[in-house]
Image 1 (cartoon, one colour):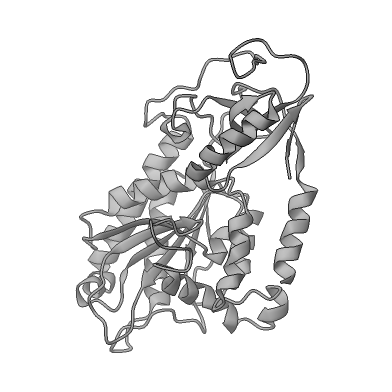
Image 2 (image 1 turned 120 degrees about the horizontal axis):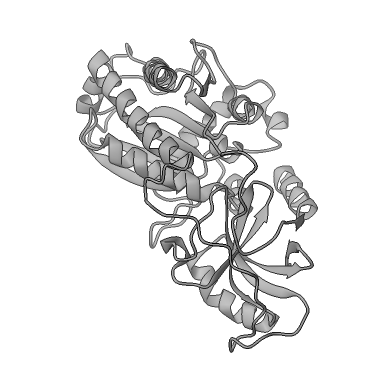
Length: 376
């Protein structure tokens, strides 16, 4: 597929990246703030999205109402935050266009709002769900199980676009093979996306839509193309009478928007350094070259397993690292986290056989003379 070949070409071009001093978080020249948020009401225009059994209520209208309420709440509370809507009326916006808007705005957070649905003969499923980019990870199920029906439905908007085949370089939302390339990508924003998703899930519990269907990693095209932490929220089921009753009322939509706003407040507080979790940045630690026995190592390259790229400085004892010894390397405004650093490549390869199970997107890197590069 052309899109896979193009992606691999880009991957090769960025395989060697210059990085700053390792092992500790350097103080930024100015405070990091969540200054821009993009709110994306799904569908619109000729794309109605889900439609109620009566045909009177359309997803595109419901999500625009919720998104507008959310935007107004953020503007009122944070007048210094740039709130960008991918659409503010009943207009059709292409999937790539939505991502382009967010990337051009240099947003710190992308929130895509949708409504779920199943076949008209089925009214049982209910509840809200929160999605981030990635592979479906439930045990005994593969990428194409579980949520792939909703993934295909949301991605199928591409088919409504003019000349979509050329524009999306052969991407077919109905073909499982089209999703393989998404798993080749190291998601630099996974940690922050998951953090916001967890907060959203917590804040929406007990609201207009009572049941939570949880958080999952799924290959939504619009999330893949946004270069920032991003989540997609399915606010409830249009096909379920109880959920639909909440989605069509002003009170129900107001509660959903309020819950999303509360999640935004919590996330922004932590993002801006308020320390909701109460975790402090680690103290600077000098780089030490040691071998597998903890003895001083000879000069030369180091090897390790990169498990995460994040805009946040995480403490070495953060649960994400599962107890593995970790070193951090700064690359611009991002931090690369490398575990099991060693001068012995074979030792690193042996460690990767077990570490890679816990971190499916991890890979071995070489660290030498202030630079870090991925090993083939």
